[in-house]
Amino acid sequence: MKKATSKSQAALYLLLLAALALSAAAQESEGLVGPEGFIPPPLHPAGAQLETKQLAPGVYALLSDKPPVDNSGFVVGERGVLVIDAHINGAMARQIQAAVRRVTNKPILYLVNTNFHGDHTFGNYAFPAETRIVAHRETAERMRGFEHEKKFLLATVNNDPTVFADVRLRLPDVVFDDYLRLDLGGRAVELYHFGPGNTPGDTVVYVPEARVAWTGNLVLLGEESIPFLIEGGAGAYMQTIVRFARTLGVKTIVPGHGSLISGAVLGRYLAYLNGLIDSVREATRAGKTLEVTLAQTPLPGQFAPSADSPFAPLLPFIAGVHRWNVQATYRELNRR
Image 1 (cartoon, rainbow, N blue to C red):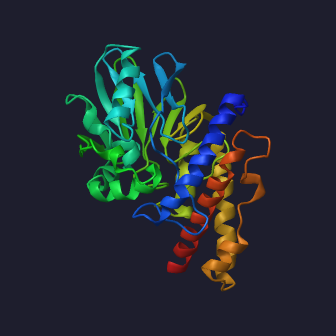
Image 2: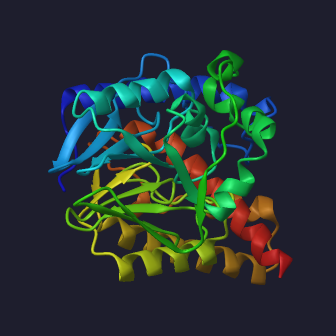
């Protein structure tokens, strides 16, 4: 898949860079805090529109025009609709439903939460009561920490609690462990848990006939992103990506945030994680402190956006995620 090169998308990423700079001040709040140089992703949904893109007959991505505000999507069968992720609040959840209604009047049978984070689940309550919410067992359990998650996300929305003012907890109706097949009538959607990655319950939503997968935060942002070890370990994440790549012949990935990408991004993720583990293991064996390891393990050049890329303004965010990953991997290796 070619990189986006339009002036409009480049402008969006420049706006994102400004938002990133503003959100850095939010790190001191009771929210998303990482090592020095980490910048929380700006997820405030104000002004965000979800643009509908048909990927195959009955298969639709909902892509935010304000990255990295969350994406979504839906799949239409003869009996009804399956939606992927509920977004961050009721207003965004209703925007998802309005997009569905512009395509079909069939009932929304299922809503799948790809992970437990509030920007993917807080909109659950705004879906019809008859819609069955589906999630991995670990995701469902962690969603019970509702109030903590609201505090955790504050740094990502510029410390604006009004984003969550209407939100109420709605837990999944159906849980699964490794695999679940949902029949929409003439079209099946498969749910896979290949192991922990960004969260313990990361779920891949796959439409086999279209070879389209929604990955939530397992594949986070777009073509030039890297994994984000926000709650996982590098080794486990790598094994999860290996199982994902071996099991599914994915053509198109709708990441949790950012632009559409091809399945080839999985190779990039594996190369990054392998290099991360090797670099941090070498540092720990040499007895280096975390501070020294962070200073001597910069983001490798091959994983930084090129200067002429529309993703270039994302470099501060990606470099900050890398510092988070180095810190998480250092602590993991030193616990052994």
